[in-house]
Image 1 (cartoon, rainbow, N blue to C red):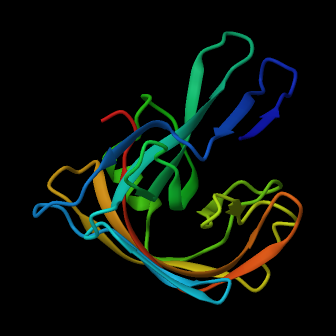
Image 2 (tube, helix red, strand yellow):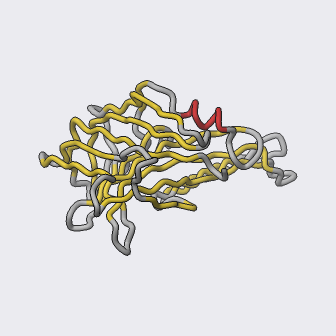
Image 3 (cartoon, rainbow, N blue to C red):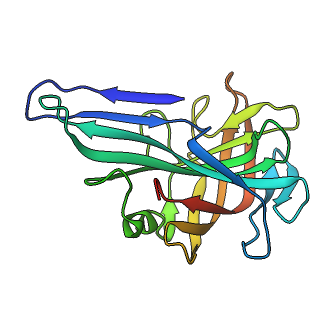
Length: 214
């Protein structure tokens, strides 16, 4: 879990709290059916080709969010909200541990707890993005669990993504305006907790993202 807290004293300032957890709050799980698009990942990880799809009997998907808030320390009234949205491909077992998990962080806005669907949709605009890390928690974050259950992340170790790239290349709206399916292409470096690294190349992820509290 990453918890960043910046406190500035004085009644004209705000306290900004950003909370992100790659297990996601209020995660939901689902299986592909005839009414849902196929969710999939394809790409090379540590020079081994990986292909996962919800069309397979042992694969399912999940989606969820992390959240935070900003408030005035003089009256403790919420003034803005901050969310990150995640999408994962998981195995159908009792652990629900993701194989591949992508989150996009952070969206900030003034208003009710849930972002307007138009704000949520625009947060996933087409184009190039960066990977988030400890000193700049904006952009994408990728988690991968290898066959031994070891976790690798783009923001572990040095979090150096100098030669990495990530782009949203298509967004599909659903009948429910709080749900979208996003096609993402990327190359990046993953790290374990001791700083070892592996490369992800020619990767494509198509996953479901859902707005907060809808």
